Image (tube, rainbow over all chains, first blue to last red; front, side, top):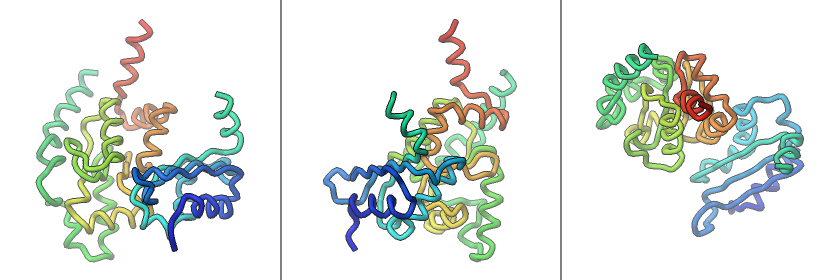
Length: 86
Length: 154
């Protein structure tokens, strides 16, 4: 199965019940081996950063071994609203 | 302050070049020799041996990946010099072993006081939101950024 930003976006949205997901292919030539993701989910509420990132890592456990570089940002809906006001 | 400077200098001697940059492998660690059952204990001892422990691709002097470099630079910004750094590129078993140990799929990995803190993203966010200064304080390490801030406000 081919990795793509769309595929990752859908998977994160579905499994983490995310209300907003951004996935950017950060590979220079867009060869889909490096990604930066932003996940906004109510599931993150009350969880420290490490646990939030673990949720994302678990969600993409199958895919991560094939991803060379992976950056993530995890926000609750409330944090996301605040972030957008900045 | 002078006491912590002294500590930092002593640690620099301990870790500078020799152990950190180190040519090849982890002499004292014995990860390679350990059976898979014993590896977790070996790594447990390793991450608890020093207050600040990082696993990098490359060395603090020559990081081989942007994320490892970011970790090195963040620690440098905070004036943290006496940390133990292990180059996973020198040791494939350590590279996989530390991922299994922390149940974390990527390198770099940062440990404070024997506890897994996270990778580059988490350290960066802790740096940005001020948590890192607090966490270092708990370890008795005064972040250099505090002094910088004080100077700014004068």
